[in-house]
Length: 223
Image (tube, rainbow, N blue to C red; front, side, top):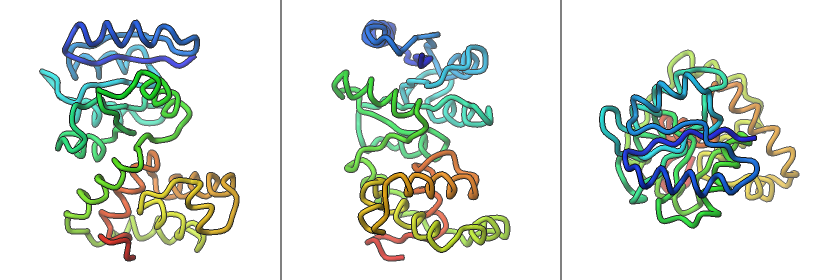
């Protein structure tokens, strides 16, 4: 059973989400929060697997709430941001703060349900179009020189793992990476897991952010 926490300042939105999710035998709504601060409190208290969160809320917005929830450490719930606009500046900030993905509020119900399952399974959720837009946004920032600690972590990667990181940074899926490297998807998944572990990253979304932040991947796909 996947435990879900709903965070939205609109009562009707939360009620609609609850009704939709409770039609699924593997989803259980364990709490509702009308603002980000309450979402963080409930995340600590009821320990959901996924927090479905509006990006714009009173008291504490989705960015601050995502950051606080990510800071809960090992076993922290995955945050799935709901937003009205793909290019909302709050979304970019939320991804940097620790959100594992986002969906548009106009997405069909089956996309939302599958998105929750995807996050609960340990994967991140960014569609190809959204990933490309995120990459373009991150590319505007000036990369920073890796700190000694970051350089040490990068040095732990094998040559193959470093190649996988670069392809992750370009937003490629496991299937696309497998085709590019002529290896199986299961092997790619293993490499991705090792890259995340060695670099101390939560998921592949943050591998993208890491790659751009540290200049491993540059605009135009050159690295």
